[in-house]
Image 1 (cartoon, each protein chain N blue to C red):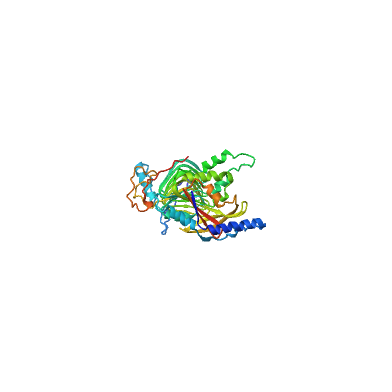
Image 2 (image 1 turned 90 degrees about the vertical axis):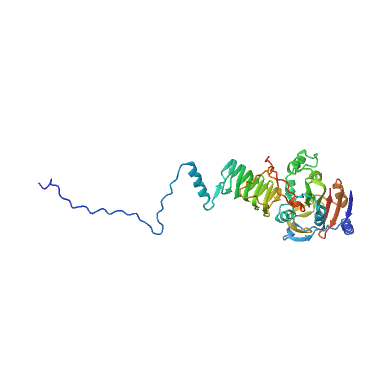
Amino acid sequence: MSASNGMGASLLSGNVRRLLRQVLGQPDVPLPAAAEITTSLQRRSNGLREFWRGIEGQPQQAILDLGSACQSNLSFITGRGCKLYAEDLFHIALRAPVPRKDQPPLPEAAAFFRENFSYSEGQFTGILCWDLLDFLPEHLLKPCVENLHAFLKPGGNLLAFFHTGSPGQDAPVCLYRIHSADTLEVTGRETGKLRRHFNNRAIENLFRNFSSLKFYLSRDNLREVVIVR
Amino acid sequence: MDFWKRKDEPPLPPKEEIQPIVNPVNPVKEATPVSTSPQERKLEVAMQDSTPSTVAHIGKSVTIKGEVSGNEDLYIDGQVEGMIEVREHNLTIGPNGRVQANVNAKQVVLHGSLKGNVKASDRVDIRKSGSLIGDVIAARVMIEDGASIKGSVDIQKTPEPAGRPLDMKRADVAPPPMAEAHPKYSGSPVEAKKLN
């Protein structure tokens, strides 16, 4: 597995600044709350561009969108000739039972995932995960990634976003609408809490069964990762 | 004795013939006779179909299990389980509608809940209160913000020849030859999923 940093220097400086703040006891820079994202914001997405570039030319493209269904994503994806599969996994994950800390993981949780997130092996050319993994409960994270690996066909691309905040920090849960091949329109839906902090090493470990990762860091502290199976 | 004598009663005035009141603006029309023979009844149904379109309405207290088919627009606000075939007409599922069926229609507008595969020759419109679990094949699909969809969306703009039924399974029909340059024109046959 190889990894290439799109903007490694700025990512490193961002991590150093965060570490200094923690050492000096300064509060972390809060992420913009969903309430602040009252209007849609357009932002360039290098990760999205790389995602489409990586699957270009593959036959019978099927794209799995794990965000909330929206007209712009449907129009864009079907306009490219792809078949769209919609699955609002975020709200499904919110209904999953949460095990207590003093108890082992509930077997029903994995079964719940299998019942609600079941597709064929290698069914998808691309999977748009957005920032779902930042908000998934811990006991669902690994089963989710394992399923994503199975559902993606060899050479397929997975696009995932990771916020750069601290665990427990409020973060906007956004709807990502595809405006063009490299532009997203971001609309705040609600506010959630980041379950964990992902650094590059943690992301590499999480997707260790995949073949390669590419990192892109944007100005709004959102790390875009394109994972190739 | 004059008492017993029949008197010549004066003749009664001639009875005025009661003429029917005819309104020159809305003349009275004769009722169309209804025949009872089957052949003539089929003709009457065909004549009714050519009249301005009507909408068949299934109210919210109605539950139907089985196949629902027709030659007119259909509005469902109740519960339907089975199969719905209104091929050249529109299907609207109201906000109270709970449908668990495969649907074959010209246009589908969803305000309620639908579990099943949808095939529309024109358009599928999922409104913000709508929830769809199933696969969609249509020329156009519209989704309002707030709508829920779980399943696949496949845009197929190739119209079926006139008078040819839109079968859910195309196993017996060979796909038309299409250019191979674009993945959209891969010509893979459509398979219908069975409801669980």
